[in-house]
Image (cartoon, rainbow, N blue to C red; front, top):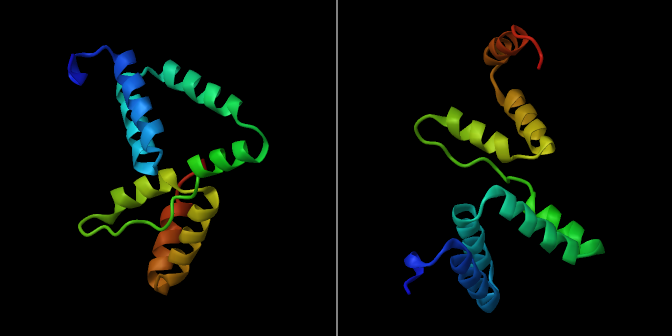
Length: 126
């Protein structure tokens, strides 16, 4: 039976086996991509819960910190930077968003800073 003809549980078992055998980051990244496709949200949540319960102490904290690590610097946007900036902001930590916002604001020319302040102060705070 080809991989594409297998039911989802068999596909995931095979991909899990590959990830365990290879044991490298790309293999585990592929596993997570297949899990998004072939497992329901509930199944992914149960898998994550079981895996996290199997860890303890510092290992658990390191895994969680790595899974939700910082976004890093924003990517370069050549045409329209706003959609790229919004996507980056979705992934960034609060500290990253604040740091880049302040640095960008401070780098603006005075007239642009005034226009920006007028723009953001003209609406209600969320």
